[in-house]
Length: 396
Ligand code: ADP
Ligand code: MG
Image 1 (cartoon, rainbow, N blue to C red):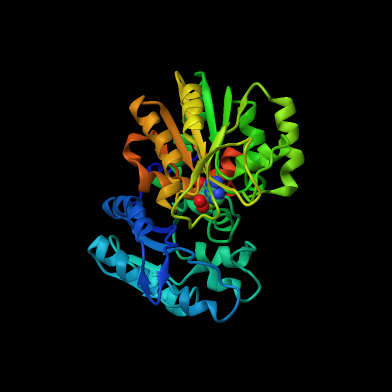
Image 2: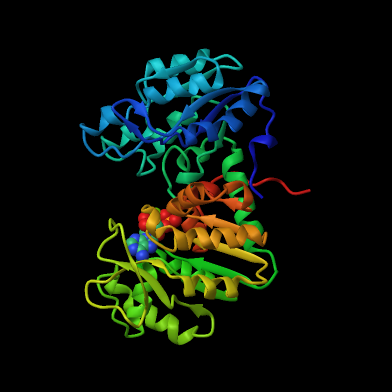
């Protein structure tokens, strides 16, 4: 077990807190503040328990000078202050005398945010390359380090992994809950356990499939990914998205796990994703130029039959091009079935989570994981460096 923020006496402590405040910003305006809101729980816990917060976060990617201004964290400090209903002191730099003295003088109950940690990438990728001198500097600002940035836990950066070498550390509520929920469903010994995979590319998901196929009883494959599997079986898939490099992998999987894998039998077909209309076609009847954009009604029935009686479901990827309402029906039908039958279901992946928010009710699910890349790597069976680096709890 990893230590959590709750395992520390925070009274009078300066907490260096790594948050994921990586929100979409356009011309200084925050388009979606979900991540800022999600970080409030851990921040408020620290403040309510007598600590103060020195917050570190990345924002976007900084590769060249022109990336600096658009990835300035200042607007985030303003929004965070509004949500906390208190002043958030902002430092436009990532280190230096100003940062030192602000941290030095920070009082219990106060919050400061320093500039985007990835500003340090401009000069030799110090943040992303996990430069230990930088990590040591950030550690020098406080007494304890808390990592609440689940979305970057699959990365070993100075602000989440390096810093753990120099301070006692613990997890914030967001990563603690994510790990607890994912472990909770993966390690439970109940069956049937059904995995539903979809989304755009097989190659993004090969390692997830390889890890989950041995654990699950059935694997239902929809989304664009299904057409590469159908192509591997010899079907004409028209102009559907094909991941040619993965055909061999699909063949192997189909040979080895023919009894476990279920593919679509029909599709909603159009000439492109922007089409207003579509026709329903059996997957054996595609013509050149037909693009499969959602699973068809017979496939919805086939998938529901295979979900009947399931005790656990893990979903990664959507059943169709859900961004267009015309092709969102298959994905929605699966969510509706899960809710109606009250099946314990984990949804992981950025688009998958977005599709639940758009088409269904996230509160009806066991867990909607927010960390796209981090959750995918965790489902691949990998250790997440941002979690591994945190101090272990002494047992007993
Ligand atoms: P996640 O982000 O949850 O891991 P992916 O990014 O792999 O999921 O998959 C979601 C994306 O796949 C969405 O943008 C969706 O529109 C696209 N997609 C799913 N099915 C199709 C399809 N048949 N044709 C084109 N795009 C599709
Ligand atoms: Mg995606």
